[in-house]
Length: 127
Image (cartoon, rainbow, N blue to C red; front, side, top):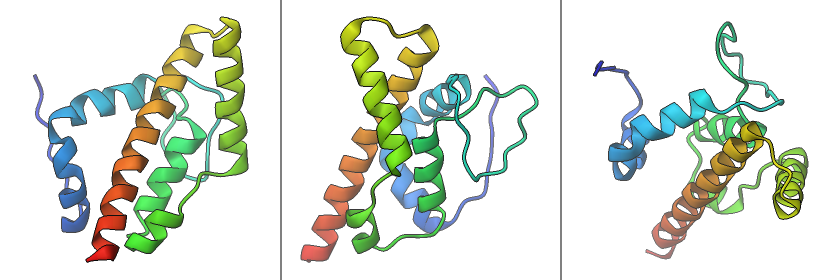
């Protein structure tokens, strides 16, 4: 197995610590997710599948070093919400493609991450 070393701000490292054991899995899912939207983030696209809009929005948000209040107030765009709604409708109808199943999985993981971040943000504001 290859080892990858990156430099990130200490604050981000602290936030990622609870996910340390899942980072390889999460990065793999990010790279392997195929969907049809892109966002403002300029990534090399040579052999990479497109990354879900909501994922890029969360990444863009996190690099701004948000305060606990910012985290509590954060919501993805209406476009990302509409895409999720569309995927959920297709899921109920049983007509999701393999790529859409993977995309829906990413949305589910993102939602879980945001719930945890917001809970921690609420806890830090209450202290």
